[in-house]
Image 1 (cartoon, one colour):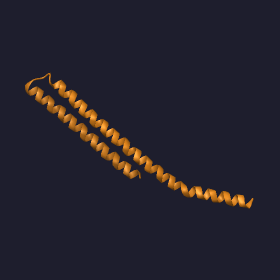
Image 2 (cartoon, one colour):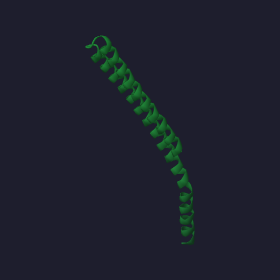
Image 3 (cartoon, rainbow, N blue to C red):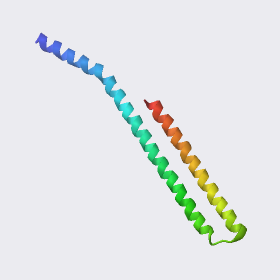
Image 4 (cartoon, helix red, strand yellow):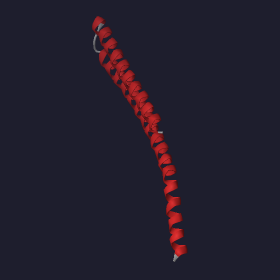
Length: 101
């Protein structure tokens, strides 16, 4: 009986000593997954901005002269703003992922 209690105590102690290692591994995996998801979101947002820009410029072709030029500049500006926001969001997510480690 004494051997059994000693063995159970030793096993319980060993399990509690390994728990922080499992938690650290889980945190690293979460950070990696968070970073990968952020990268995917960034690529999707960038592609959406480029698609929206292309569609807007296509609509601008219906206009002429200064109106067409202004329309294209607005499309460019909107795309640049969307891309910059996507990049900022990505950089923040990468920093958050790094802080999770």
